[in-house]
Length: 293
Length: 215
Image (tube, rainbow over all chains, first blue to last red; front, side, top):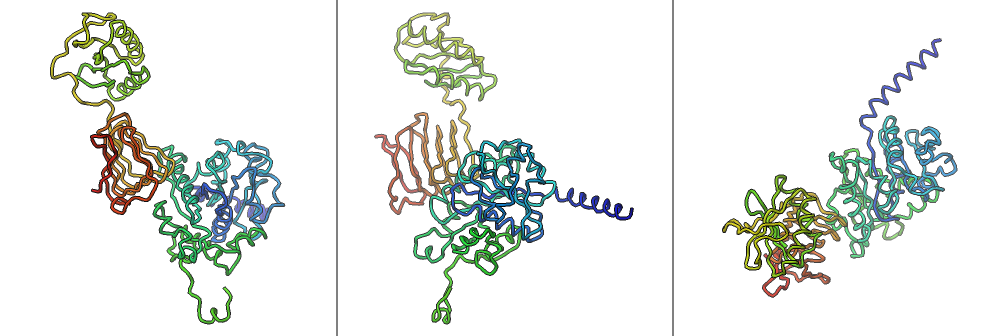
């Protein structure tokens, strides 16, 4: 009798917290326009970072037919039901959501591999997102490349956007196009609400190559896109290793990629952190003698 | 073809043989948007044509006008017209000084403060004023002048309906293409230092060449 009572008490408490959180639930889209710039890597690390900070976070893979996020998060084999199953009503959210193995606050909603982007309907996606908003603090949408239906659905419901850009002209131009779409075709724009908050994440940045003139600098990119830079992720071989082993890069403790993503999450949450990894590191005397990086 | 407001009571439509019916319809539609109370149209023939041609033109224009809720009331008297009445429309002399008040229909200017991103098109039947950035591959199309107070890297078309007196002013000029009244210039190579990212004024000279001068 007492146990049952206690259980009920807990349940009431939980729903209360859930109701409070529903108000502040934020939909964040990770997008870029161009493919291969690091959207999925950024989505995985960003969502993990938010979850590690104690926010209940879910990350949704919108790349129907080319699912990668589950690989990078290391839970490929645990995908039974996916996002499209939920949209079509073939599975409930709780059956489809996969809890991350290292972090209790992090959940993944995988994309379907056997369908295509037409499986995403506006009503279906809206219903799933509204349902997730009841439970979670942050809903991270990993957008596919391009400006077709998948990318459009991923950004349509966004409150904030991380635009991932590489320091090269074509990537920056495509990001510019995506920013235009965010400002004109997202739900907030269509309904005339406050515009989607835009953040820029520059990935694969190599200060040496910027200094030698092969790569665009942060200032060049800022001059074209005119949005605030949330963070700079240096080019590193750790990223490849992270995705091959199914670990979000933010969890490779001690690497500069992990540090960069920790900074990005901190700045996103409003903390003031100085920019790192944007200038060429001067090698110390010992390092110059003994080598190493 | 030109549609002008002559007085409070009617609009004057100048017609020649080259005018397309679809253009006339566009003009009527935009007139109705611009002026809810517009009702009466006076046709002014500005080219020598036979009575049969005038009659046919009036019949066609009447059809379009009726569809838009407008009515052709008179034909303006001119040396080009010898009859008192054509196709049931009476020829009258318009009062002097009222005819052809130079007020273009629907020439409201557009004012933009957000950056114009790559792939976006800003179009206006009138002037366009932009405070801020015009990105690569964005297009600004105005039937009037274009003013840009910021960086301009996209394509600019002023006087798009054929107005050769349209001008373009840019605060920091690095456009890919400029055009005035359909006369265009592609800027392929880097501009000279006195123009690149500088304030410029672009206009057509009397020989219809595009001029870009620093300001």
